[in-house]
Image (cartoon, rainbow, N blue to C red):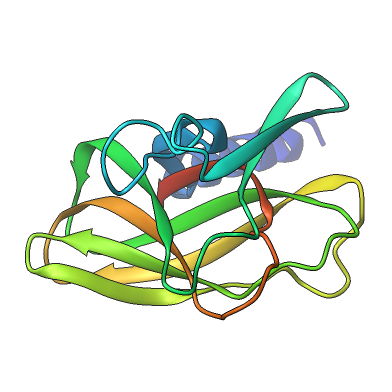
Length: 168
């Protein structure tokens, strides 16, 4: 029995060493309050966003409802995001406020490309921060995200805690 247990232990150890580990790596993150204005400077300084502190000492930011249709803010990453498959992860604070429809665009050297819409799941728990993952597959490197209002309304964007580039 002792030999059988030793053989089983060796097999389990070998399998654990040979099994590839898979974990997502956060490449870069920008805090919601650090969004940039189209004209330069911070979106907060240009009065395009508002911030609030939520439970736990976290500060979140959102685009004001007074932003016109196609108005936007930017999240600039310090390093170029490599071409290929990545995930854009928005960590958003969910409350009861109705929000406008916002598009998420990649800023490429060749211009802007719509990646997807930022959609909060209907069953998202109110009063919590959730992750909204947007898969991206771009043929060229890029370095920024634009959050652009896609409707003509007085609704704000969702509250944004952070925007990250995640490499699978």
